[in-house]
Amino acid sequence: MEQIVFGIGITALTGALATIAGSAEDTESNIGSQGDPNSQVQLAPQMGFVHRIFNKAVAGEPPAYGLWCALGAGLAWAFMAMQINAVLAIVLGCVLAVFVQGVYATTAYLGRTASLAKFGQPVYVDILKSMTSVTMAHAFIAIFCVVTLCHLINSALGHPFPLPLLGLIWGIALGAAGSATGNPYYGKERQYQNQKFGAGVPISASGNIVRYAEAGERNSLDNGFFTHKIGGSASGVCFGLIVFLELWRTVLFDKVSAGWGAIVVGILMILIFTVADRYIEVWARKNYGPYTEVKVES
Amino acid sequence: MSAVAAKPQAGGAMNPTAMGVGVVMLLIILALCWYVSPSIGLMALVGIIIGGVLIGFGTHFVPVGGAPAAMGQAPGIATGVAMLAAGAGLAGLFGGAWAAEQGIVIATITGGVGGGLMMAITCMMVNFVYVFGMGIPAASGKVLNDPITGDSQKEFKSQGTEGHGLPFVSFVGGVIGGFLGGAGGTLIYLELLALYEATLPAVMRLPATQVLPIAVAMAGMFAVGLFLVNAVLTAYNITGTIEGPHDPKFKRWPRAIVASAVASALCGFVAILIVAI
Image (cartoon, rainbow over all chains, first blue to last red; front, top):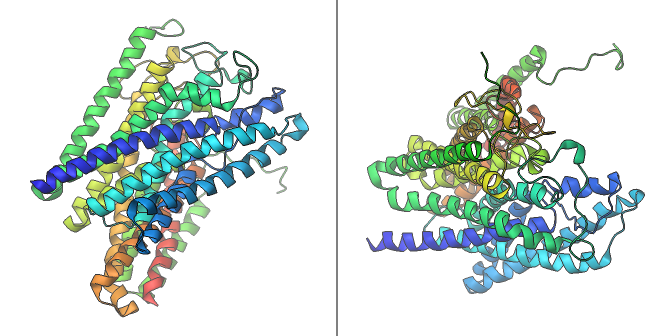
């Protein structure tokens, strides 16, 4: 019984860490325009819309976070092998991983923006200086949370995978969940705030991203502030649910009926999310209605 | 025929010669494996091939819209197909590896359910953001009616777009894709783990208990690598984006099955050679 209560406590803690990680990851990627909306940041100058948006896409979010989390977890693992305290080892590992992220962010911004010189897009040194440190801070939070939850899964819950491999797996999953949930909110709702609410961006408007703020030109800190409220929170909830429910069903039901308990609970949870998704879909169709008149086939 | 005169091949066209070459390559690799390690190695390779094929086939179900989906210009999840499939499959592998002691059937299904659960949560949250964050209903650009619910789609597409969000058929496709990916990844891991547990103590001249962490780490890394290989192959097959099982691109899956089998066999053979030679 004590073991189960301990497991549930660790599961709750990892769920909370994952929620923070998802939120920080999405905000970091939005400030750096790392996800798919990056295509518009890169396209805008080519369409004549010079901007001051940070543009640091190194790779897709999943492989980028896979690298950084695996690096943080690997270094923390090495420090722990050197008998350094686990908390200090994780912090040191994550700090070093974040420096790698900072180097990638700097070279990506300089390289990507310099390639747009022929379209008149300047490299803003002040943007580089002010944005890179903010993305690094958010990346540190995300990497630290992932490495910590991996350490808890490994040492407290007894998962067989070594820490660096867990870092790689959950880093990729973090990037996948964060980019899937957060990208549309940044790409459509923020970059194209000048388009109609409640409709997709017409393909003809591609590249015409919003470049001006209430005062002066918009920069990526404004984007991070805006997207964090819904996109970041939703990404956090998404990754938090993934980690929490995956661990919860294993910790509580793994031993029930020789492993079938966890499988049945997993299937039940999938069915619950299916019903919730269908409810959301139908709710939108009823409340927002069609864009054009429904044609009833005779 | 000159390059100018050559007709452009349709993306979905099957090339029987290439498929035949693929099958021959697969047989050659299996024969080589039988020569190097006729019992345990060959069994592991067959398991790896089945796992790789499951991943390659499963990735076709995952609804991914790429960059256009991030602007609400196309349906699907706004990220890369290989990356999303990898995220779901690896989450499944995580669960499957945990259940490894409970036998291959339980562990494989556990891995599959883990991948399916990850996709179910992600797909629901995608629709949540589209509907409650952006006020956009889900609409497919490839079919007039949702094949499962029968809901009309055309009227719910906003002007100048190919659709947006995840219609119900795409949600179901995502869960099936996550399930197949998680099960395939776990199967590869289990096969390699059994192989390494049996052979590494003799190769490294160490007791089995000391070798176990190395075997787990090696099998896990190869499983992750094989997952990415198969997911990326499928991403090429569907040219980056797909709405799900109702998308016409889905019909290209036989080509990916052959490619995944050959690639998995080659990578698996290398993983076996490490301990077989």
